[in-house]
Image 1 (tube, rainbow, N blue to C red):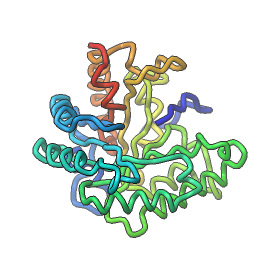
Image 2 (image 1 turned 135 degrees about the horizontal axis):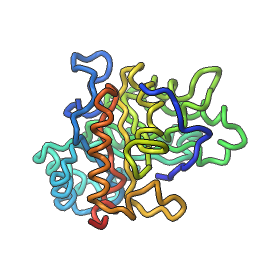
Image 3 (image 1 turned 90 degrees about the vertical axis):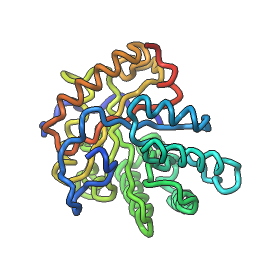
Image 4 (image 1 turned 180 degrees about the vertical axis):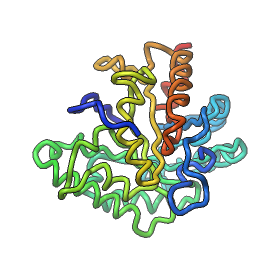
Length: 285
């Protein structure tokens, strides 16, 4: 997952965790902010399942986005993922299949092949898509075409897919239009939920996690789609205010608690995902 640090503007109009990314329009569950303390985390890499689940449970994580390679059926990772699913079930933690490459934007058949491999495992409750089209050179040379291609990718991922889809997004998609329509709104139409890469080290105020996410929270409330925010723990030399690597774990947890409090009137708010297990686990106190 890359980090996009800037946008043309940061000020926009302001606007149940147990169901994960369910609970959107069409269900009987009340569309209200997730309970305080609702947490998820990305799991990139092949870590020991027992340690991962024990850590997640201790941190009150209720959903893990677990990376699944496209070769899952043949590369030896299936037994580990089965063990992870079993342990997660015992701990009451949901498991979403995590995957994505920038060039899936222009090669959606690769994404569909990955999705089908995920579905064949019968291990996951959702698809968590981390495709970042803005890292492609074509985003600079043909942004509208690249955005349209990304929407086509989401359409292809939904077709014939029984699992809900949650997509990682930067906070500034609402600044773009494709075919005369707002790009962020078009993304929301095609997914069940989003996770905003709201990578900042303060909860509220100027250029904070809440400030950079307000546009998505407003759009999510209108569309009745869940909007999860996110915190970074990897060191980022080029943007120290985008991560908690310097502040440490206690400061991050305090900040996320403040964020929970500040979002009580944001019905789309779905809690916070922490990027990522490997760096969170070794974050200084």
